[in-house]
Length: 351
Image 1 (spheres, rainbow, N blue to C red):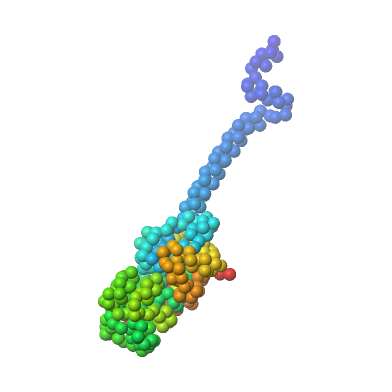
Image 2: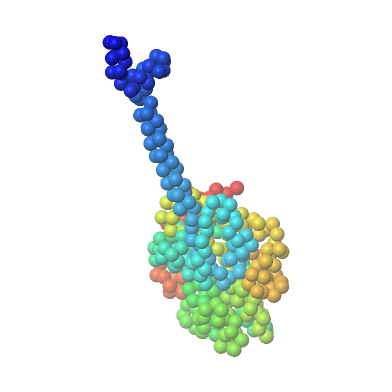
């Protein structure tokens, strides 16, 4: 009876231990639920961390591009490849459509866009104002996307007929000054002795048609549209003013979201390569997108180079050129240093 009493007094854990036939001690049995609990908690923590990392990764992979859509040469790589090269690199690219490179630059400064596209002239003015920008490289270079429209009988190398239609504080006005300086007539512009008609780009062909402007310095497609007017000719080589398109962002975007920035640059590099692989097919695609007649882009298309490039020397040279012009035109008092616009290291290594 004593033995039976002792058996009745065994704890549930002791009874469980007895059934294990001595292979596990009571302490080991007690620890089993605790160990399982630890594993469950650790798994939950790891899962939470993984989910949070994934969410952060997706957030870091989203950028907004302020894309000037009025100019075919600016938008061409994005039209040909759409968003595929960026999506392939895990980047969710949203597009904010703007009407000019100046508007694109302003959107980046204001924070309504993460990435912008601009020519050198707005960046020269931005440097003088100390705007918070950083240049990520260029993806277009061309000496022919801007030119002079003048009367057919006018002599090449002469001062264009007045009034000359220009778009103020852009590559239009800066290219006019550059041309006049090359023929030794820049003082006419510096001293206000040339009559200018300051217009928006789409209004220039109309001004040439109705005679309120006699000539113009303007970029494509308004250059080709202006050339369609009777008794006018467009010269795409006379200015000798090279144009590059700069990819820009805010320093905070580059510092805090380098993976997204790199994905964008890799995407634009691939987009340019794909355009170059099939140049004629790409040209036709861009013509259809804008509703241009067939071969409308032929006079200029082959002279536009699409290639991602980061060269500090080239960046300094072109922006400094336009900063000097800005000073001559009275937009700024002194030529600024542009080094603060350049990242210390190339955002994307070149092959």
